[in-house]
Image (cartoon, rainbow, N blue to C red; front, side, top):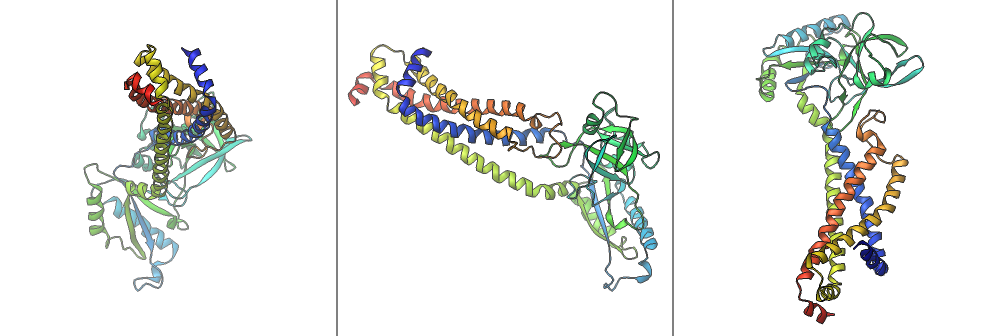
Length: 423
C-alpha cells in the first residue's frame, strides 16, 4: 500500500507542493507555540522552594520634616534605630504573630521581591553569579519555610547562626555547580572577595512562578542605624487567621500604636498579594501571548482542515472509481488519511531544519536567568527541541488525520455511479 501511496503523492506533486509549503510554515509556527507553552507549563510545575501562605510584609517609614508631627529631637540615627526596634517589638507582640524578622527591601531578599541582588561566588578563580538573599535573623527560615536538603526541615536551617564563623547557606543548584562530585557542607567558598564556609544546603528556589530556579546564597546582613530605612518586617501568622481579616484588624489596632517618634506604619500586604502584583505584568504578557497563539493555532488548524477538505472533495470521482472497482470503504479512508500524514512527514524535514537553526542561534528563551546548566528539561535546548518537535508532529498529525478523514468519510458515502456522473 505504501508504494502505491507514494506513487499517488508523486503523481499529484504539482498540487501537493503547495500543500507541503503550507505544512512547513504551519509546522514552524506550531512548534513555536508548543515550545513556549511547554516552557510555561514545565517551569510552573517546578516547586517554588518556599511557602508564603499566612505571611505578610509590614513597611515603616519616616515622617518628612515638613510634617506637623515631625519631632526634630527624634531625628538622630541612634534614636531612630531604637524606635525601629520598638516598632518591631510591637509587631512581634501583636496577637496571632508567630515569627517576625527584618528583611532587606532593596536586595530581593524575600519572595516575589521586585528588587534583586547578585554576586559572584566560586572556588579559587572559578566563579559564577548567584542570587544574594541577605537575612537578619534565622526566623527568616521559619517564616518562609526554606527547607534543608538533608531532612526537608526549615527548623534545621533556623538553628544555624550565620552571624558567626563566616557561614553561609546555599541552594542545591549552587552546590551542584560548586561541588559537582561531593557534599558542599563544610566546604570553603569565596564571595565578593570574602571567604565563607558552607553551613547547609537548601532546596532550589524560583524567583517567580514561570521562572526556573537559580543558584542562591543566604548570608547575614545586620540592621544598623545607618541602613534601617532599607528594611521592612516580614511576619508569619497562625494558619486559622484569614488574610483580609488579619490586615483589617492590624490596621485598626496598630496604626496609632506604631506611630513611634518619627516612625509610622506605611502599609501591610500579604505575600500572596505581593506575588500577584509583581507577576501581574508577566502574567498579562503570558495571557496575551497565549491568546494570540491559540488564535493562530486555531486558524492554522482551520487552514489545514480546509486544505485537505478541498483536496479530498476534488477527488470524489477518483474515490467513486475506486469503490466501483471494489475498494473497501474503510481501506480507502485509511489510504487518504495516510497520504495526508505522509505529506506532513515530508514537510516536517525542512521545518525541522529551520527550527534547528533557531535553536542553534539561541533564539529561544527559558524564562529565567542562570538556567543553561540547571539540569532541567527546559534549559537543555536539544532535549527540549526533540520533545517539542515530537509534540508538534503528533498534534499536527492528529489535525491532518481528522481533516483528511472527515471529507474522505463523506465522499466514501456517495454512490460510485453518482460520483462518476459528477466527473
